[in-house]
Figure (cartoon, rainbow, N blue to C red):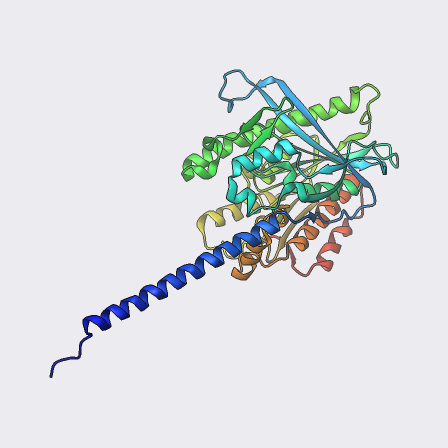
Length: 417
């Protein structure tokens, strides 16, 4: 018996139904896509405010442009170009109702960042940075509550901007610290210099664009340059503190109590700078793999490691090596060491990126289990540990103060893995 077959008319009707189905699905996908982009665009324009600092000081912010005439910049395309840095300083301020609120990122920097990031990232996946509200004021006087305040250097990771860590900087300043971060041409993703020049980091200076062996060579080269830049910035602060005629910062910076902390590659810089420069009295590495001679030679200063949740990475050989490097440094630290892991945190839980990037994207990361920690809670835990650690080792606060954050936050795991 022959098998039944579709007639030509039935076949045409069948394929028409299939085509209509695919057309309906395509239309639905377009509608969903347009709705998603509409939601992202609405979120982009929505105002948001950074977490409120937990200290009692008001916070001021100012900027400096410094040229290192003693060093040429080997990353610059022009031979003989001098190294330059743009420094951001947050500090304990005198309360003032007339001081102007500080923008999260000045307009020229916003324009340069948007141009370098592309339309999708800057217009849809990131909030309008002009709508991000800080708690700093522009250039107020330093608080007269104390004669001088300890100084902490802040370093962002890789090509990240210093202002990505405004939440941590403002919180630390509110507890009575000068906090100084800096960006540098050809190293930071984009820098706007004092004369308006915009300098972007060439792709060749980004280790993520290179194979592993070349990336490591570049990282070690960048580590030397960034550490040298940090020494230059501290020396500039010494000059600012000592010689600025009748300046608001003269003798207000206590550089005998100098600390440093950084995120990611900035954490590696903190480790190496504290190894190299005895002016550093205490440091913190926030989720940064170690590099440099500090791995073999260790540290003498009090130091804290504050890490995200790397439990999924432990089977990876490179992650095991990083863990061994952490242990090599940590196990030889003198009194004044701390190793903290925040369960559920991801690599960016320590920066403002978790607030200024689209919360729809952040929500998707939560659903996928990539990041389980609520964004503001991650920043709160980090800020608490940063100021408490420096309070103990730069202000002589009781050492048992460092036990308190773990009691407040059940996500915290204390002790080297």
